[in-house]
Length: 187
Image (cartoon, rainbow, N blue to C red; front, side):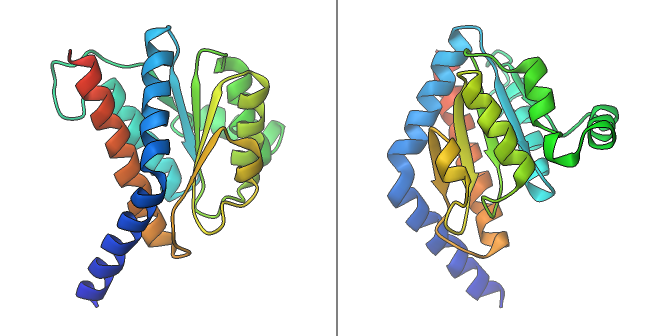
């Protein structure tokens, strides 16, 4: 079982990177340009994707591979329980990320929404708001990309319909972006 999972893991990552490597490099270059212009990277998702958002933001604000790299402006919209619960209660869970983007997003920012299905309404609503704010809007999805295809400047669709393989590939992509940013900002 473990060997089969590993084979599938490698196959999904290889297929996805083969298809989207140029797009991932483009996303990283947009992150660099926006950060250098005083912008920030805003990341969000539900469940395991929320954990990915927090993980990526921590790598950018803290350090990824070299502690000499300056802190980079990144925020996960999944960490403030008071904000999450007040928006969910007073508005709706569908607005839990878009309401936060109303407060934080601008044309200088990169907005990254993560959804393994590409169909999470609260992620899609936030991505649409990011577009309205003229942020550079990125999706990390799976399956067929769902409604995220219509609202993202770039939507990286993992070549799988298995949630675990999609999540594993998302973290590989997120780490790849962090690595590119580390190398750039260490110059």
